[in-house]
Length: 111
Image (tube, rainbow, N blue to C red):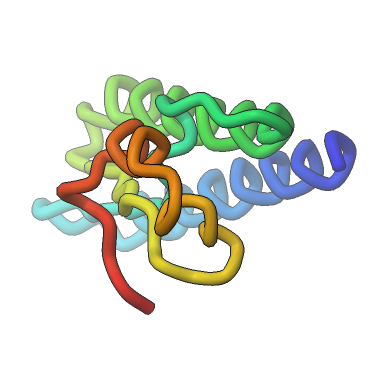
């Protein structure tokens, strides 16, 4: 699991690097924007989610660092982290009210 998440993080970095190169080649005054989709589990701890949480936290930090580095080229980076979605993987949230509150109940959506 850790190896798989590490590969995904590396691939995300490589894709981002290529997107930056492409955006810089266009040389438009408006620059560009890179948007990542993540998850709230970079900030909310859950048992047995260590590899997943690490990869999401890494994506958040990469996004923030790229935002600082790419400001000169007018390239924005943003991250979208939706809350828990009502799926079978999150079955315990339906039953366990405390877990639901910890998962930011106001962002709990339906699939």
